[in-house]
Length: 194
Picture 1 (cartoon, rainbow, N blue to C red):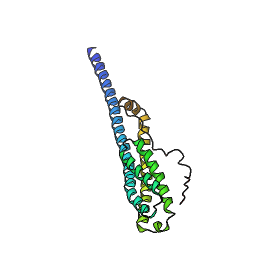
Picture 2: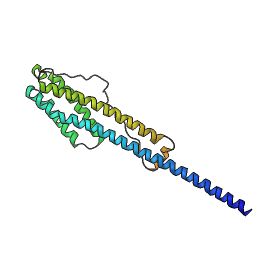
Picture 3: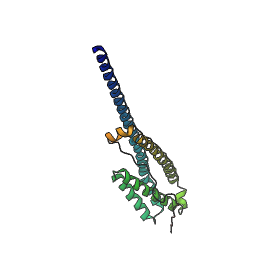
């Protein structure tokens, strides 16, 4: 009889140990998955910022080239220079996105201004800068798309069961998607008078 009780005791202890090991494995796996996905979101955001920085680095050359031809457009050139400085001084992701959106608008206006200066449009330097800017804008778009995909993957795991429990225990919060500014779906209206 004592042997049966001893066997039941060991079976009970074995079941408890297996359950504890399974729970530890779930927590461990979920935590590591969340950490990896969080790092992927951070890397993806860094890629977006890299492309924004590339755009910001092109601005002085673009402004100088346009400035040499378009002496009447000083307000636009000044605004672009101010936005470039503002972006570099901004630390939060939300403020950088807001400033980057303003830079996009200002650059669009600058390129429309160039239409009024045929000799500027014919300048090899301007054409080269314009091509570099177009390439950069495409790279920004790709980086934003990849960032949103990384956020989607991360947020999904934060919401999935049982990793949502682990996410709550270790403060893995949902991440925000990159969203276009309100009204981005509308064609911009630019009124340039020379």
